Each structure stands twice: as C-alpha cells, then as structure tokens.
Length: 305
Image 1 (cartoon, one colour):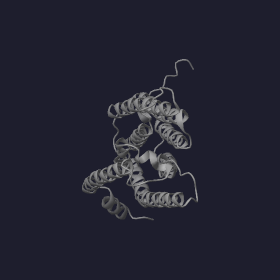
Image 2: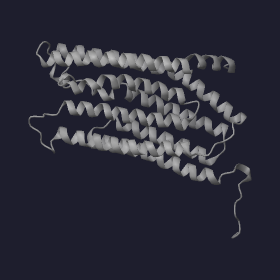
Image 3: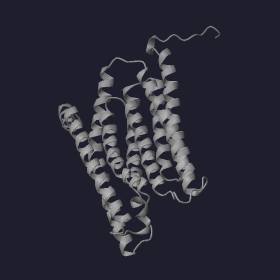
Image 4: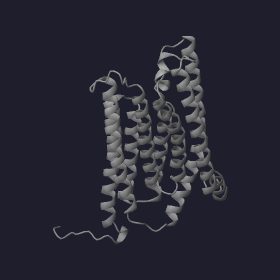
C-alpha cells in the first residue's frame, strides 16, 4: 500500500507553483530560440544556401512556417498543465485538453499557410480548402471552449468530503504515473522523428508521418486510459448518478479527439468539433442536473403513483 505522505511529497516535487513557473519560463526561452533557429533555416533555404528533401520543404518555404516551432513547445507546456490540473478538477483538465487540441489546429494553420502558392491562388484548391476547414474549425472550437469554461465558472460548488479527498489522492497518483509516461512518449516521438528524417535523406523511405500526429496519437491513448481509470474510481468514491455520467461523457469526448488524429481534412475537423461539443453538452446537462440533486435530501414526487 502506497503511503499517503509519500504520494503527497512526490506530487509536491513535480506539481507546485514554483515548478510550474520555472517550466513556463523555460518554455518561453526555448520557444523563442526555436523560432529564431527555424527562421534562420527558412532564410538559408530561401537564399539557396541549404537544400532539404521535398517532403519537408513546406516547413522552410516562408517565414510564416517558422511559427510552427514555438507553438510546438507551447503545446508541450499545455500538456504539463493538463496533468497539473487533473487532481484539482477533472473538468478543468478536460478544458486544458480542448485547449491543446485548438493549439494543434492553430499550429496546423501556420503549416497550411506555408504551403500556399501566393502567385497562383485558387480559392477552392486542395490547399486552400484545408486552410479554410482549419480556420473555421478553430473558430468553432474557440467558441465551444468558451462555453465549456463558462459552465465551469458558474457550476455549483460542493463540500470536500473524506470520499472526495480519497478521490483527489487517487488522481494525484495517476498524475505521478503520467509524468514518466509523458517524458517517455516525448523522447520516443522525437527520436523516431529524427530516425525518419535520416531515413528520408538516405532514400530508405519517401514519405514521413504528419508532424501534427507525432506524440499526440500516443499521448491521447494514454489520456483515454487515465480517463477510464478515473471513471472506474468514481464508482467507488461517489454514487452521484450525474457525476458518473459526466465522467463517462468525458471519456467519450477524449476517444473522439483521439480518433480525429487518425483522419485528415474535413473529417478530422468535424471529429474534433464533435468531441468538444459533446463535452460541452455533457457538462451543460450535468450542471442542470446538479441544481436539483441534493443527495439523500432530494425530494421526488410520487403524486401519480
């Protein structure tokens, strides 16, 4: 049996305000340096001083594509925040998950723009349609995230009971487990990407994976497992029907987001929107149910029985 004091001590070492602020500062510095390095590579490519494989030319085609790099580092920080907020609130963690998805979409918009041919622009070309889908999808996602956050801010507060304290401790254990998983997936994805680039330059392979799908495919699988574990644990720590249904809905929304990474184009955007919209609807119905749910003191009408 894991000691409660040991769990709290270990959690405090990874998740506290000082660590969060330090990681935030490091992220800003690294993102800035990454942007400048990427921008330099773009100008070297445009001036003909370096040449790269046609598969990755889009990343060095114009200065706008350099924005892809800082957003990649910011996304890693957002993943840390998702884990950071998980013990405090499952709902807030889900909100961070939605924000990560929206940032992935923004990053992809910069990639879409870098592939545009400004000398020969056709409104309904394949490249333009992809850009239009992503921009429209981001606007819808941004609005849905606003609705989700609005519902969170105005939700009913509950007293922390011994059962809830046990549930929070359980989520802290999951967070501690997620840290090495997150680090392993980050290193594994980066190394695999470097290997693919090397194989591409040697002619062993002719295409590489979409950079938007690297790391996040595996990470969202891990999130689904964590969400299911939280759902199972919630049956032990609470018998509130509305909370159980809400947590089940959050598992569904994570699954939909994960499935979206296996698709492209309009299908991908529609699945992302569907996943976030489902979460908003679930939280809205949960908020309505919560207003009438007073536990054992709830009065049910049997006038017609």
